[in-house]
Length: 328
Image (cartoon, rainbow, N blue to C red; front, side, top):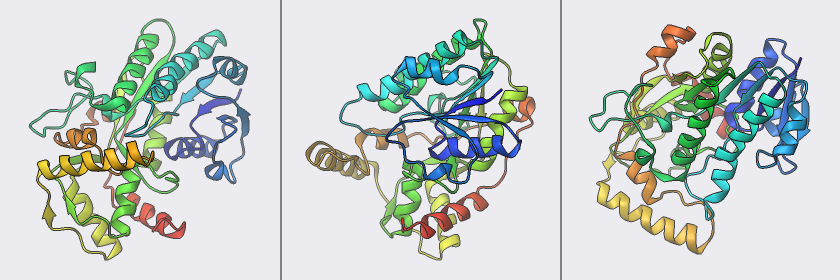
């Protein structure tokens, strides 16, 4: 029976699709009429038209499948109408799970985000048990993913087999949008990164993250979530790695937070509200950066056989891909 996959035209989803295809799986991929299909080139799979916001299309698309990977999400840090994000991320997740239940699907792997984890102000790595609530979520993306994760966890504890994975910050090739993290790399390569703020993140190789999804299907416990992460790095350490790979200078000026807030407010007002395009920085992204998003994957190591590897190879592939495809 085919495996149904959402998000295969995107960055992480395309790698999950290729990892499954590499194991000989028969794939059925949900695509929208407006989807960019570049990431599907050379992939042997059945594409079906549908939309997370159209439950009827999901019912039809999932029919005959016994496994679902729900990777798709609206991943933007700013948008003019936030309701669109909640419709896709929360209502869409609920619709996928309902369609899976009605079609008798055996297993669902839901891709959440490390954004839903309870990060600590002291910089210590967070894990799946770190205290967190909806009130801790900064911005519509985090809030919508937290709400969607609660839907998935509840389904996994109520009779369906639903395993949740929380990727940290995937990096690698095929980041076609690019994602907000990919934009950091592109801006660095275009020499548009004159300064940095004191923040941190966890980088994971997108290929390994895709394999972690398959491990979650095979070994994960229903109703549980698993952080799929790699190296914890400050933003400065990431920029230094990019400098070593590209030969470009790493910024040496550390930006005070009040300056970053001001820059975010100006960009959000001018680019977002006046020009109607996604800002490079917003007040909420600056607020997010005040806590280092360091994470522990110890649970995935214990239960899924997850391995933490350095990010250098993934960063090098990402840099080469962005250059080869004209992003920088």
